[in-house]
Length: 238
Image 1 (spheres, one colour):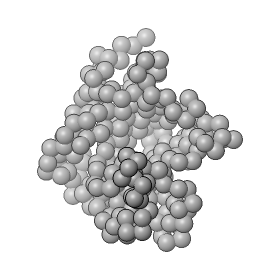
Image 2: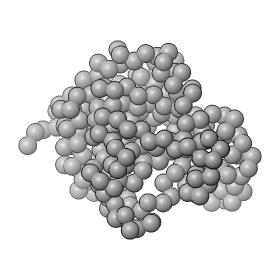
Image 3: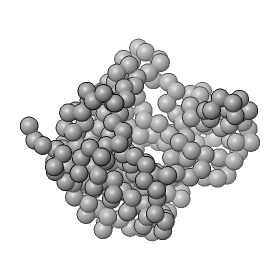
Image 4: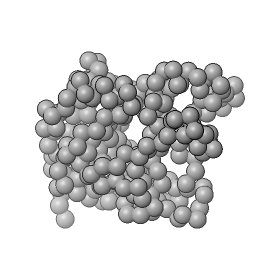
C-alpha cells in the first residue's frame, strides 16, 4: 500500500488562473472553475487517504452512514497541507487580502437509500449571510447521479439576500434564542418556488481534478449521491 502521507500534490494550476475572469465569474454567478488543476494520480492518492482514515475515531458520519467527513485534514498529510496552502494563496490573489485559516474537509459520499426521505431532504443552505469563499477540489468525476455540488446562481448577490432577509426567509426571531439561523436549512418547497422566478438550481458537473472557488453565501447543497462515489476536498477560511 502506498504511503499517501508523504506524497505531495502539484500546485502549478495557480499560474493558469485568469484572475480577471475568475473575479467576473464570482461576481456574476458565484463560482469559478479551474479544470485539470490536478492529475488523476493526485486525485487517486487523496481518495486512498480518505478510505484509509474512514475508521478514525473523530470521523463525522452523516446521512445513515453514506457520508464521512474528515475535518482538519490539512494536519494529517503534507499533500493535503499543500493544497490548503495553495487554496489560501488563490483566495489572496483574488481578493488582495489574506484569508484567515480555518480547516480542510475531506469528504466521501456513497449511494444513499433512495427510499429514505430523511437522507435526501434538508440539504439546501447558506454557509453565511455574508460573502464567504471556499475552495473545492473534486476527486472524482461529478455526474447528475453521483451527488454534484449544486447552487443557485445569483443568490449570492446582495440584492437577493436582502430581499430574502426582509421576507423573513433567512433569519427569523426564534433564531436569536435557538442559536441556529433559518438559512442553515432551507425548505425544499421554497427552493422549488424560486425556479419560477428565474433562480434555478444548477449542478456543477466536472471531471476529477477540477478546482472550484465558490461564494457559499449563495444557496447551495451537495445533491444526494445515487450512483457511484463522490470524493472531494473543501478548504474553509474565515
